[in-house]
Length: 169
Image 1 (cartoon, rainbow, N blue to C red):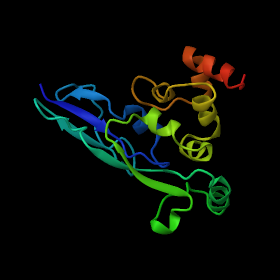
Image 2 (tube, one colour; image 1 turned 90 degrees about the vertical axis):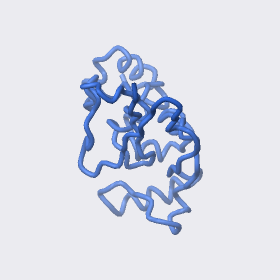
Image 3 (cartoon, rainbow, N blue to C red; image 1 turned 30 degrees about the vertical axis):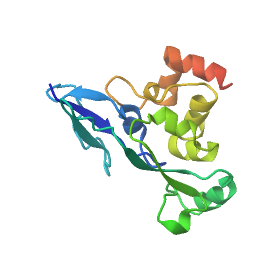
């Protein structure tokens, strides 16, 4: 039976729900498969896999953070109440655009990013839980894909352990 693969845009504006679903596979007739759009401004898509068709062959462009650009990023962020986003070549002093394997998971991609970029993507506390607490991205949402509040996250077994490891007791 053909499958659908959830494929999220990987950058600092991708919400937790999409980061958590990235590369998740569902049978096409699965009633639990999330219906797009999941939120306003949805940029994720479904790739379809069938017999002999691997939708994850090749590479995919991603936008990450440039190492050593934290100060410049903070200056830009202080000028707006929205997330700083990549707008083109003039932003290459803060962002880096690269091609990665389409099979790269959210965790693999995020772990390669500088701390300021992960904080911009997840928020400071969630970034600390991810980096220092070792919390998997999929644990930031419940089984329906709804993002958990920090209080709800702390009540889960994995979340409680991550809070302790990250020193956020």
